[in-house]
Image (cartoon, rainbow, N blue to C red; front, side, top):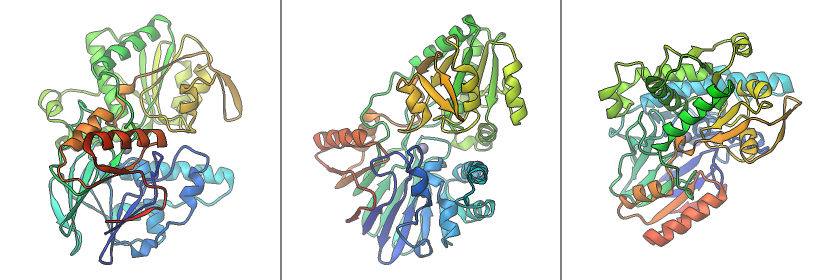
Length: 447
Ligand SMILES: [Zn+2]
């Protein structure tokens, strides 16, 4: 077996792995690169293989850094099936449609051709074939595929590939536990090779139980200061978890005063997808809350048009605005940031990973003056973060999960910045005495 790494190598985005055995070629994910100034260049550059020669693509979950180059792959000749779970197919459709629209607007502004078209996105969705967790399919004579719940976002899957007598496991992204919305990642009892994500692999998340306390603190201080709470949010999962926690807060405390806005048409559509797939929600949620409005949609002002988004400004404080994008590298959050970051009574609350090079990361790391669309903004607002909203496992969770996988001969560490991956490799070596490799972009291994 030959395995080549063409993305998410010593960085967090661009997942793309090629596996070859006896002439069959399978791709694990086809994500786009995000964040750095080289990201766009990398997205536009040619694949390191001929898309026409690929038999099958497997998608672990719908995030753009795992799906964003699928339309380019199809545009350049890939005609095979794309396997995922049913919610992943639905969410991939939403994120690709959204990304195509943003890209088209951007490329019209900058006078260059977009990476792909609406038609390419339609073709991608047509090529999807869905299977549920624990169902096994023969992809060809060599490869057998089974998905297990990864607990990361709705429909997310760990890929288990049985290739002849060898078993290869790919985590895609592994969830942070316990999650109220999703069940914990499933245990895989044995495997020969593991490709493991490492987004937070050198960290320990803060206590999950503290997050509702912290959120209550932030909302209360917004009310007391008659301010604005801005939450840059990722459309999938974190927005829904945040909505669920706000609903819980409002059940305990009085929420008469602040107005709550969800200013993200994508997040609104994604929230509706959660309702379509109750089987993929956690057992706990299904048992205790499913008949209730567990996202508090009755209270929420759902903002669709740009006009409505601009009108939020005229509504008196206190206000709580959840808007994309999560790393502030685009989206409506930027317009709210221009309006509100200058005032010390306001709060900017980060609830997710901020990739290197993004505006979110720069503000999080303490920059006091930024530029948005050419306008200088002095940051006087309070900058806060709640780490436990992360949808990724931390180091103890990753090591515990790996501990259950017997017979491992080698672990490949992907999807993490260099420091996280290096620390994680050390931890794996000392705990399991297994070789952990951190592949370079384009590196090939023979197994
Ligand atoms: Zn992800």
